[in-house]
Length: 313
Image 1 (tube, helix red, strand yellow):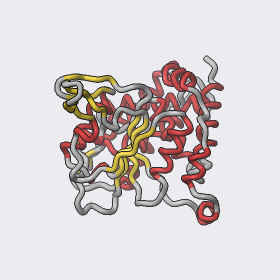
Image 2 (cartoon, helix red, strand yellow):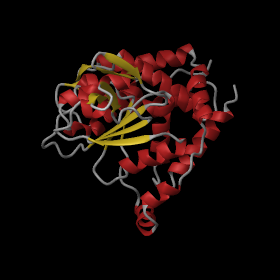
Image 3 (cartoon, helix red, strand yellow):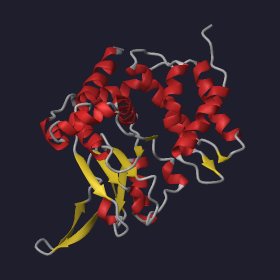
């Protein structure tokens, strides 16, 4: 397997997206990791940090269709999945597909929609299919949902239940840029103009190859055991009601494989696991009280530091 195809792919994506999102190459790479693993992203951050621009530039770079859905309290499940409507000219019912029939979906402020509408995403995210009036339709590949929510403002919102939060592969945060980076952004042309000038940097064939071959990255039994030690550490932590699920353990395994490939290796190191574990695991733990994303990440870091790292024999 030619591991350089992974690093070349990563470099092209990060280089293109960083023209729009300055100083956040690490977040761009994590979003790309989710994409290669066919996972979904929950992006928590205050308004105006570039969440929408990040996904728009990412979709443009990989050459995929992009749809943005603004979640509001009056949004209905059919507004996402589509509806069967009666065509008076033909005298038959026809299906009008909703915005979920696309490749890259931005679910903006997902916690502003009702639980009923939020749950309509679950089948699409987990099974890559949509059921309407008893008929099931498969979504085209690639398919990724990136949902955003404002962690500060809670008025008029519906918090995501644990079962839905667990469907997200990673929870990420952009954060503010440095002073110099922000100065360069406010003095340049608009981000929308830059995105309009972007062209696909990779082909669909390259994407399909990476999605299939990252599974061949070697994970030594001792490194896999290291992952399970971290997972079990979350389950044995007294501060948590429940620890990380099996779905979370599988996500950590996949993310570590892709991270190793993007680093130019065909085998996983404990450092790869440490790099992605807080992003993959922190949102999957349930505590007895409200736990911010920063506090959850600190808990995960503490658990990781307490687990013995396997050494090369």
